[in-house]
Length: 455
Image 1 (cartoon, rainbow, N blue to C red):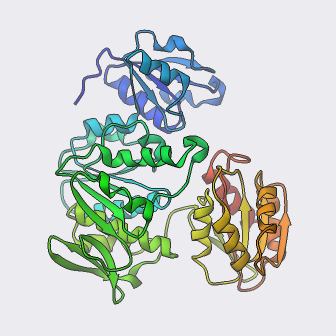
Image 2: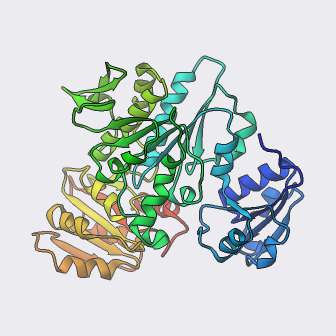
């Protein structure tokens, strides 16, 4: 493990990842300067008050780089930030907490990324890994872009443990290390407001594969052109996952059973009926988790244990309550049109859809077509409401039967309640981010649930 004694490190961004990295480096002897664009009264700095660190708040001045050995960027900090560009020109290494964790982890790491479904798949695999180690002396660690940054647990991880790590494109764009088992679930346009082009976004995602070795394993979605198109990047073993049977290693479905083909042997894992998650996209998430688990040597019994009883994560097709016999669902995590499409396709009931938020410069055409085919009542809110209305005017479907345009999500909840009928599903699947009104998708989902509970 690398020695940090006396190393001068600049950490930009004091959100979850930045705070965890600052603590780890400081406790291991590094000289840390933590910088954030927010002011002191906007940050929970008391969480770091026991550490001997310096703060530079309200700006990221060039002087930060004086005598610096390493510059670390939190996930919300763009890799092309002028300070990061200047650091590279000066020969200062630029990294992040995920890179440092991968370089130092004593245990093999499973890394999962994708445009959609990575958090659900990571949680599924984490449940499988925990079931696999239950009753023995090893542990399963789950984190990264989901929950707790794994750098915070590095000192407790042993070489026999299992590590499952979710990785975002923001983290991957900086990285020059890859997990021993790496999965790209799917690859479709997303975060183009940050990456600007699909090529740059794809290149960031491909970093999860680029630095693997011949003994490592890649798991790709066979039925997703973006993911399967990365197979030429694979350095070692390749597993695929998908619904349809195929010639090769990986998972598929046959006669209502999930099967795993590996090393010339076909294993029957469990019936599809064991899956409680709604929607075809979640079926693919389960198939992915099983393929990754197979690559990691997790037995079918532990895979089934991970699936059983799992109804999903908060803000992802989360059932809220029934109001006058209409069921309300929170899919605030649908921050891209593609995710809203997947949410709509998870239901056969008549739909009342709440859509809007802030656009990420993505293609809305598929969602607009689906709205005109499937959504009975549409409620638009947030920055993108008029844009979506304009796109809908150009469609030629028979729906929606009613269209309401309101300013914010609270008004959208009331407008949806006004039109929802018995047997309907009322679905928050915005298609846009929350940043026009809320701190993040989780806060948006929490407020939505509060307003629904108050109906």
